[in-house]
Length: 420
Image (cartoon, rainbow, N blue to C red):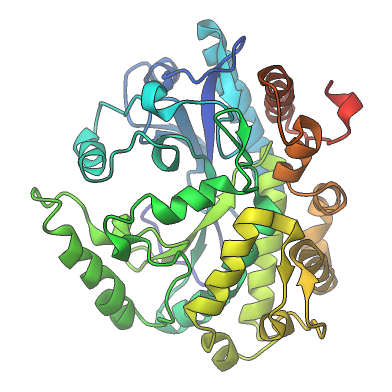
């Protein structure tokens, strides 16, 4: 979020959506982010503020980020803003015979040969990352996500929000997985992006931890146990002192006390902004419900350690909505009395709770969520068509259809006859 007056819980949201730039014919990645920004602005800049939406470069030249310029209060309106900016970007890219493509991972990109790092502006930061971690890998150069920024005003609000966020993180892949294919093959993970996310900075383990943030509920404790540890561990690798522990921190939800936000990073990008915002709406109102202590009390939320939450997360990145959750204590958070339940069924139960509590806010997203609950995560829908041993021809047909969905701001249907 920009540097504005601090907001209280749920007064607004920052939304960031990342897309690949690919060739219109081959669908191979194209390093055209600088050309896209130059054409849009008239000169090369890192950011293009286009009213409600800002365009930004990312680590690699084939990815562009579209994000809300100011905190979002009306998500339905912002779905249209995102759609219009995607149309604008595609009109510019058409001059290069290129277009934007959705999903959290390119299905056949070779990061060793296709990676081109952003060479302008803050390039020293990217060069330092590359020096330490070697960014020519799927976990760096081939991943696109949707980031959700949630505001908090002070330590009390941070504690309530962080406690709730930690409980939702493990099951997000069961709602948003969209990265099942890498290098032309089914990766055996429905959310392979997050498998790489967990491991790509293992050279300095304190940066990511176990993805699920630790039980920390104040600025002081977060500084001591996360930021200070990262700072110490970075010193022998970042000799120029370029990297700030605050934004190097890569847990699945990261705290920014300077601007009063928690950023959730575990949502794979979907096929269109409407789908992303539908998922975000469900997540936001699930968090509202938790923060209001409608299920379990705050002190009970704070008791959950990293390990049981990490165990669920580690399962959902592999099997997404088909994951069996057999932790009764975790299920009881959402008033589930069963000893086990599939993660997709759990989300249906959560949706029913949220829809009953916040009916007006959820109405605009019901059809999109219904599609997910009936046909599965986007990863599941992709694999239902592509099969476990997809051919390049089939993948091109599927991902061309996904690109059309992005252009039209429509959801992807998994019925084979609609694509092949």
